[in-house]
Length: 80
Image 1 (cartoon, rainbow, N blue to C red):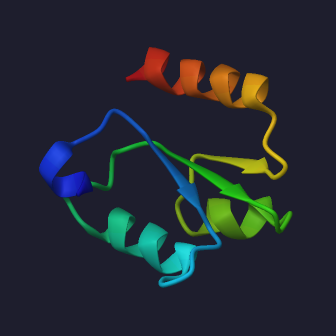
Image 2: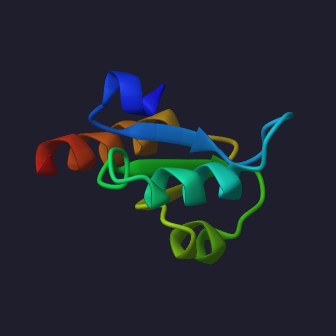
């Protein structure tokens, strides 16, 4: 979907039922069409270093602070 729709940014929950979030990050960063899309990772597991090492631009821990998400998304979109 990211290749088709070319969003300005993505949010990605690292804990999904059918696929590992780190795999999704690796695939997005490995694809020329999606590698430059900023990604905000969200997870209940507080391991920002792993998410950033796999290509995330930002990491937010659950429970999600919606004001923090707005702040980070605003910074991401202002830079695009």
